[in-house]
Image (cartoon, rainbow, N blue to C red):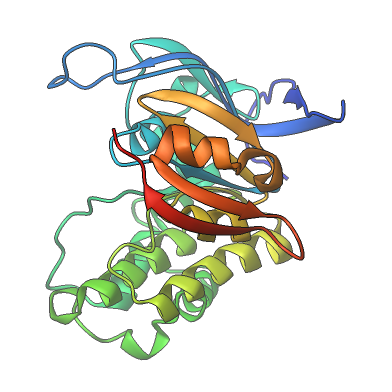
Amino acid sequence: MSGLQGEAEPDRITDEDGVAVESALVGENLELSYPTSEGTVVECARLDIPEGAVTALVGPNGSGKSTLLNSLSNHLTPEAGTVRLRGNDIESLGRKELARELGHLSQENDSLGSITVEELAYHGRYPHRGFFDSVSEEDSDAVERALELAGVADLRDAEIGQLSGGQKQLAWIAMVLAQDTEVLLLDEPTTFLDLYHQFRVLETVRQLNEERDVTVAIVLHDISQAARFADYLVAMDDGELYDWGPPEDVVTEQLLADVFDVEATVEYEPELQILPRRALPK
């Protein structure tokens, strides 16, 4: 149950079968840019992140995936357009109110080398506590659960600065899991991880979704992994939304050619498989 005050009517979109799908997050008429960019970086008429599902944002480097995710988390204010969280304009929400509902793990994290993994995880509890509140049993339980889910319980006493790149990434994932939100945004969380830990992260995401009904939007570099683990794909190309829908509808040989400049065969039975052949000339 959402804790948003004065919650508006939910946003909905109709899928290809004519079924109404409720959306946790909606971006509408978005124009996104950075102070250092020349002109608009991303233009998007409408983006939906369905409630209770895992949505993967895919596309080549520079296609606008992370930029779009930053706008959904209110880390980037649109030049035009709006982002709504369960019907509420995200800019109308206070910082703590938003953080109780939405967790965001970016690619760039502050260097906190002298604190331990467990201490970092407790940072994720700040939206649920007052300034002078001591750690509660609920906080401790949430941190324990997050450390276990992220697979770093055995590293709880290790300092962040002493960890490998992959271990640091898992520690940051534990922090955002400890935030215990109903909506989770992850920007390439499998970066720096070996194949085993990539699957551990993706399986954790799926477990959160299936067991706790967490809505997830995740930027992934590997479209094959995205197609396997996500319920919906958002395909980005050159700052625009190329396609949106279930993987079996979005992942086509035409998409791989148009967006990724790859000639490939796509097989749908017994499960979706992408068989690359060659890079296409640009």
